[in-house]
Amino acid sequence: MAVITVQRGYGSGGDEVARLVAERLNLPLLDREITNTVAVRAGVSEETLREATKTPSLLTRMAELLARYPMDDLLSWSMAGMPPAPPPTHEQYRKLIDEFIREVAARGDCVILGHGAQVVLKDHPRVFRVFLVAPLSYRIQRVMLEEGLDRKAAEKVVLQHDRDWRVFFQTQYGIDWVDTRHYDLILNLGRVGQDAAVDMIVRGAQAIDQLCR
Image (cartoon, rainbow, N blue to C red; front, side, top):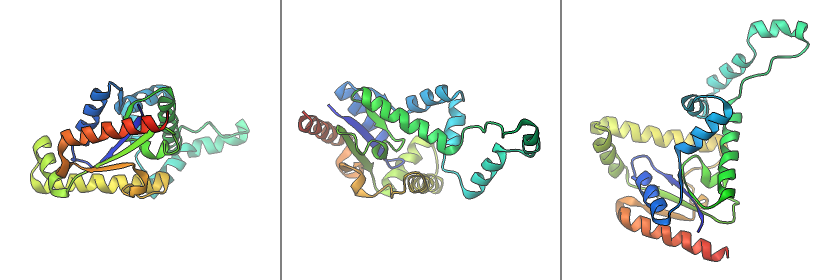
């Protein structure tokens, strides 16, 4: 088979499609397992890891640098002869996640949901990169039903997630997350529906498997 990476627009229903693809192909689905494992390795809580890997603003980066070397520690350098060991930074946490994604891909075939895996594994010979999208109105409606929000609140949530992903990929990897060159298959779930999307992804993964033999 292949290592299938699934990136999706918030509210598109892509999470469910990824789960169904994994079930159809009898492959492990990796999402929170990635942050769980990396958090354990880093010796922090999963929530700490998630917060630390969010793309920080300039002010956050400045605060992070100051926090790494508080004034009391700076004053003690002359006595110790060297600065104290700083805590892990945003970039170091991201590096741990990227390394783990490469590790699980090297172990065998799987479905990876999110985490920028389509970029991390772009040079993997057996990767099949999928992007699941849907019209804004479709996503807003789904979020209204799933999260119990009114239309205005749901739209705000969807657009904020879109902005966050755009900033994340631009800051972390220097790419536009909706650039078609980063995907092998793009499906509009508002048009093709869930079942057809699962079928097409499975066929695509099987085609990659045949090409790599």
